[in-house]
Amino acid sequence: GENVEQHPSTLSVQEGDSAVIKCTYSDSASNYFPWYKQELGKRPQLIIDIRSNVGEKKDQRIAVTLNKTAKHFSLHITETQPEDSAVYFCALNGGFKTIFGAGTRLFVKA
Amino acid sequence: EAQVTQNPRYLITVTGKKLTVTCSQNMNHEYMSWYRQDPGLGLRQIYYSMNVEVTDKGDVPEGYKVSRKEKRNFPLILESPSPNQTSLYFCASGARAGANVLTFGAGSRLTVL
Image 1 (spheres, rainbow over the protein chains, first blue to last red):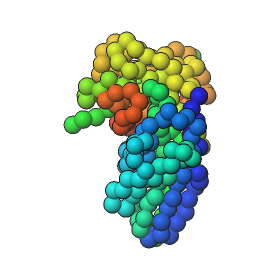
Image 2: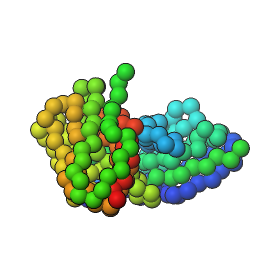
Image 3: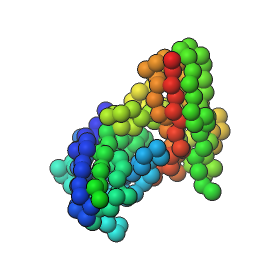
Image 4: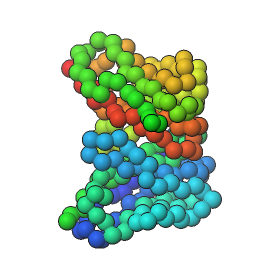
């Protein structure tokens, strides 16, 4: 079945630096690529998503890029802040399923 | 308030004692799904439902059952729980199957002794 690989598993950055998380996938039929943020002890929540008819989408300090030819998409967080510390999951639709990556734990050091 | 509600939030049980985790959504969503979250493995799909009376297996369905008799409810049933089902469980719903935003419940932490 469809699989999505997410890297890195852990990322530590200094406050104000940028953070990049990358996901690769195999099913070329996937056309929806959301990113979810899960703060400690909380539920995952959507922070940004992109559909296959666009290559990049930005919302304030976060952006997502999609390369359908290479089958990878990335989350970019600029000017990181301590409240960005969380686990981030990439996901995609595989038929009727939503399939998640294994997650990236981001630490932002003040 | 639009939400997904799951109960119980915490449960400790023993091997073999049947249990049900309930999930209810008030957004008239067609799609509902159950995930389990284990360290280093992300969110793995157990079962999903595309509408009333339509359910299908996800990636890790063994040991679980579901039903979708009403649009708003999607209970997860563990007929004979085992210790390897100790996990954090999330119910989620979406307007439709596939390419749409998921709204998650608060999670249910289950421990099977």
